[in-house]
Length: 325
Image 1 (cartoon, rainbow, N blue to C red):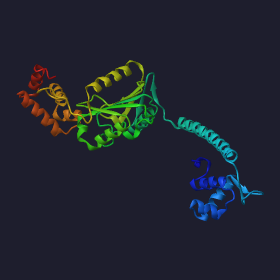
Image 2 (image 1 turned 90 degrees about the vertical axis):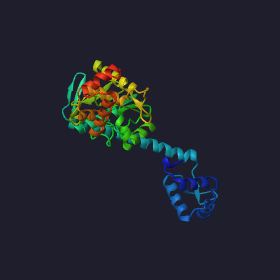
Image 3 (image 1 turned 180 degrees about the horizontal axis):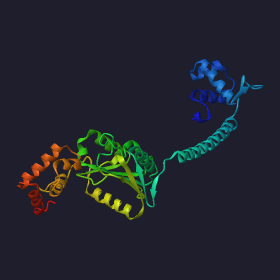
Image 4 (image 1 turned 120 degrees about the vertical axis):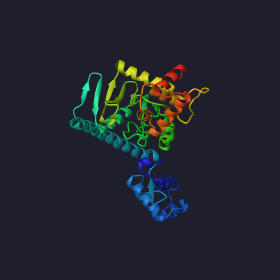
């Protein structure tokens, strides 16, 4: 209880014992506390250093034990002075770090309302910085799963979760992460920190929104490691927030099962049908779903067979007739 003042458990026990039994010496104190005499002597040396005991000039024992309201209050005052001095040094160090960062910072590509960040390392640094400043919520669209296991470009990992427990984090990933043990483990860890994860068949873009005051999205959707745009406020940010909420509402909670009504297609199959209607190849569909080309080919073949279609165009038309898309 008194460690902060420099007294470990043994030293505190010896101090308490001497306060109530000032007449006892080293041997008696050691027997009473079931300690070795060397332990008691070390404790007495520490108490002497802290000015809590001193040789007695009068009294029943060889040592005089200073009362807590005198000795411990003096230690508290000393500790408060040390903390004040340490706080002052820390503030000076913080200012020095800020000056150093400003001196060494590369030129920033900043325009009114937005900023460009170039290179994957700069993107990661910016993400960590803005998410550490989060106070209310962090919203994430993560086509690659949002973790090192699911995405070579780690935009936001569980380890970088905001330090403030009252920050709500909502993440939307692809349905394909349900087949990834690493992604499911990430989701469980995020859930333990108050995070929520949903999945959808496809996502339009990587996106991180912090407190609805800024958003980060890639400069090049095909090369997310090339850099990012940071959007501050304005109509564009409001539109990105609305996009996230729309996708979130369509998402399935990770750990749940996809909803299906009668024989209608599930959300993944609907996405495949939309891509077929747009003429996308199986490889392009696989990339958008985050699955293998073989899986995408199996899905499209099964849907065409189910619709009785001989071509992708015919499949799209039949799906539209049935109001599946």
